[in-house]
Image (cartoon, rainbow, N blue to C red; front, top):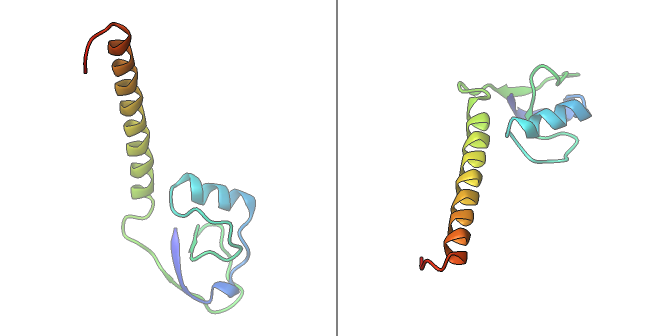
Length: 92
């Protein structure tokens, strides 16, 4: 991704695929036509634009999604274990 520092109005609008991928990668959750985070391979400039390219570019969003999935799974397993113990008359 690239961060748009200036000239966002000089970029083409976000199409469905780009919007979906931005969310999938965990970059940004927005429906804005001209968001400040764009996929470099999809955004087309029609004038002067200032951007920033982060050194980690894409790795962190995927990591956060994996962590969220692992946390959800752990919480679900803990809830199921607690429920099973309660039904068997075992105190927490």
